[in-house]
Structure formats: C-alpha cells, structure tokens
Length: 566
Image 1: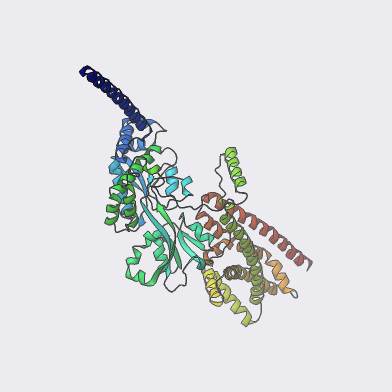
Image 2: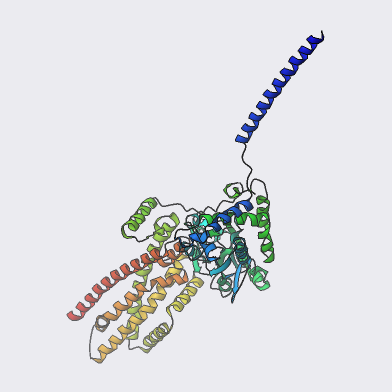
C-alpha cells in the first residue's frame, strides 16, 4: 500500500516538474516576444546631444580642411559660431556701441556655452537674415523670424520654437481702423521681409517699406506713417511709454506665428540636429523662461512650451519629430496663378541654359499677379495723364507768359518760378494734400494729384520756353501766327519736358499712387527676386520712354513742318 502511494506521489511530482518546465519555457518565449515588439526605452535629449557632440568633436581637427563638412564641424574647428542678430529690436536684441543685450542675445550666448564655443554676432535685418545663411556668412539666425511655410523652402528652422507673436497694426487712437476691412486704400508702414506683408497687400493695403523696425515708432510720431504693422512683441516696450500709449493704439492683430532660429538648408544637418536638442533642453529646464523674465518679455508661450517638453512623450531624443510636440509653421501659401508651373519651368530653363537664377514672383501667385497687372495699368494711365497735362499746361502757361497783358504774364511767371524752386517730391505732397482735402481719399484722387503735379512742373518749364519764343519772335518783327511759330521754335524743349514727365512718373509712388514701382515694392515685400523684379521695372520704363520719345519726335516733326510751311 505504501509503495503504491509512493509511486503515485512520484508520478505526481514528475508531472508537476514537467508542467513547471513547460510554464518556464512559455514564460521565456513570452518575454522574448514582448521584448521584440515593445519599443526600446527612449533616449533623453541630453544624452543624444552629448553623443552627437562627442562624435563631432572626434572629427576635429582632421575634418577641418574638408570643404563639404557640416557646419557643426566648422563651428567646432573655428571655436566660434556666427549668429545673425538684429541691432535694434527692443527687449529682444539691441546694441549700444559694442554692448548687445536682449532675449535673443542671451539665447545665442547660452547656445555658445552648450557647444563650447564663442559667439560672433553679425548684424542682420529682415531682408538679409536668410540670404546671409545661404551665403555662409552666418551659421545661425536668431532674428525675430517667424516660421512660415514660405520660409521653409529658404532655411531650415530649429524646432521647438523659441517664441511666438502676432502682427499688430498700430495707429493714432482717433483713426477709425478696427479690422482688415478698414485697410483698403490706406498706406501701412512695414519692414521688408515681414511674413505678414502678403496678407496686408491681399486686403488692399498699400505698403511703405523700411529696412528696420526701429524706425516705425518715429515715423508714426512725425506722421510719415499713419499706420504701422509689426510684431506685437516689438511694440510692447513702446506702449509702456505714457506719451506713446496716450497717442497710439493697437488697432487689431493677426497672423499668429511661432519664431524660429534658422540655419542654412544645405550642409547644416548635424548643426540643426544639435540645436533642436538644445532647444528641447532649454524649454524643459526653463532656461528660455529665465532669460525671458530677465528681459521682461511675455512668458505665456514659454510656460506652455515648458509643460509640453516635460511630458514623457516629448522629452526624448525623437521629440522634435513628434507632431504632438512641435508647432506647425504658419501657413502663408498664396494661391498660385494658372500659369505658375509654366513660369517655374521657364525659370529653370533659363538657369540651365544661361546659369542665371531668374525669379519672376509677380507671375506665380494670384496676389502678386493682380498687383502687377494693376501696377502696369495705373502706370500707363499716369504716364498718359502726365503727358497730356504737361502739354496742356505748356500751352496755357506759354501763351500767358508770352502775352503782352501784365495780369496774365506775371502770375504765370511767378507760378513757374515757384515750381522751378520746389523739389518735385514737395510739389507732389502739396498736390496730394490739396486733393485729399477736397475729395475723399481714393486711388483716383492720388492719381489725379500726381498727374496735376507732374504736368504743372514739366508744363511750366515747357511753357517758359514757349513764352520766350513768342517774345523772341516779336523782337524779330514776326507778324501773324505768333503762337504757332513759338510752338515750333520751342518744340525741342517741349519734347524734352514731355519725356521728363514720362520718366518722372515712378516718383508718384511717394504719395501712394499704385503705379508699377509701388506694386513691385509691395510684391518684393513678401517674395524673393528683388533684382529680377526691379530689372523688369527698368525694362518697362525704358520701353515706355522709347515710345514717348518716338511719339514726341513725330510731334516735333509736325511742328517743324508747320513752321517751314509758314
């Protein structure tokens, strides 16, 4: 009986051992499977940065002479990083002599410390910051640059972003402007290269361009500008001034955009990766907040970003590739023209054939094409009007100055002397002021003022030649047909001032006339290709003046034939 029990116990123990072995094998298999399908533990951005810099430093100095080496290696070789920064943007970057200070200045210095190199500051503005990157004259731009979809094709932006703002329109408190609907026909002062310029133009605003934002408050004060548009962060300091705050008001804001540091698109992959990781660490550890607090900038965005980059899913070496962690760029894509692909193909063909980098932005987007067509149309109207006004004033003033009647002759001469003594720009401004006082501000009013000013200035000079010819003919004893003979004798001067009127029409853009120069200026405020754009302006006016010269030559021939017949 005992042997039976012992045998049964032995069999039971053996079965238990087999079950345990099977269970253990199953557990091992499950562990292997779980390990195979489970994601590897994420690496911290600190560790990833340390490894990246370790590998980069290992290539120094051997790689320092290689022309195609990444810019990170070049920075480590030179032991300095060239940072493009603005000279006058209160709270963010200002310069007094050799001393620089501001939020972006301290961010650049902190990056230099992380890389273990010195910082060499280079002055940039809105128009030069991206070109200087492409030309390898700076390694990094930290210059209040909004990250939008258009600029994504021009530079490589660092993520996460280091600040965010929106464009605000500022003007006198009494000015009735409350939204984009109030902008058509109004002139807004902006800086070249501001990403929001395209939206202002698309709403019918006329733009007056400046290279630096720092001049905008002064241009508001001296009434050169009625409205100014710039980042709200720029105007923040000025609104702390009681006098400025009493006179001016933020009318409305638009185009909220994240600010990004940027490097060149080519040859900067490792540098961009290092800066991405540094930016992560700065947000997570609150360094951006500490620097921002030091310079009294608004901290709301930076606090939000700190919360984001402290989360487990973002605080990894792959955090900048996670769309739930990084902010998208502002979408500034403009609707293309129907023939934009053909224009792009033509630009490429020209570059492949001649090596010339031709860009035709006025033909590739609907807003630019509309501005370009309107500019050509208004220029032709302005030129035709200026020619007609010049000829009309020449005839009237010439007849008056050649008259024997004192009451006709001397007022005409005094007017001519006043116009000859006044710069054409001043004459335009006076004409525009009078026109705006008599009529509602409109494109027609501005064009009329420009035509009147150009016609008066050039017509008075031509009229003086006609008047002098009449008195010369009298002295010679000429009788009958005196005015017609005087026109023939003064035909060369009349033609010269007609041509001068045609060549002088671009200056009408100074008072807001929407002719071609003004339109091309607006186009280049939100697109590239300034050289090509203004070359086209030169070609247009050269062709127009050639036509005017030919027509005037025909007119002079007619006048000379009349004189010969007489």
